[in-house]
Image (cartoon, rainbow, N blue to C red):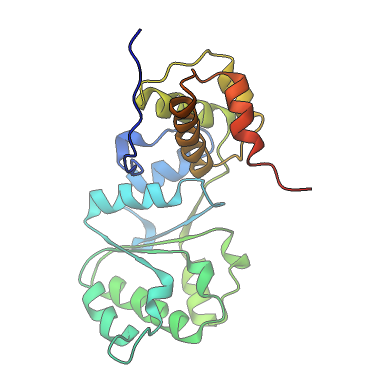
Length: 234
């Protein structure tokens, strides 16, 4: 029997179009991403909980459009030599994706910077994509002009991953590591894991590490030990 050896290898999320698993939870959002450059008003908002696939879709669009991706928080000054006014003209020379808009709520400088970036990108004839973890009305933005511009955009809402999507993802992640556990393991994991892409990736990585360290196949018993470490202290 061939012994499996463990190596501490870095892992990177697969963010290409082919790696995006389509399900009812995200099909509409993917269709809207794929409809670029025919977005109404040249802008689109992606909303959904953490792990629903916003970053993945942002990278899919960036690969198709050549867009640059920035965090909304970067539009606030971090030093005297780096101000939003310095960044915006350069950013507006092409398509832009701005992630995590909800995280700048109540930051006047970042909100004002995003407002000017929005206006300049569109004035230059380019497209802009925004993301946030909740519906726009829950982002807490304080600048009325910015809020009205965002509310005028088409919104693509992603739902938390459903069972079909998480099943496909778990099977793919395990197969990528040449792991073929019994079919009963997947339903077992689904009933006990956090329901997000990030959680699925982390769980498979830890299952693989535990299997290698213990020189055991991935069974329900091994998975139970890994999952027990996730349980909150009582």
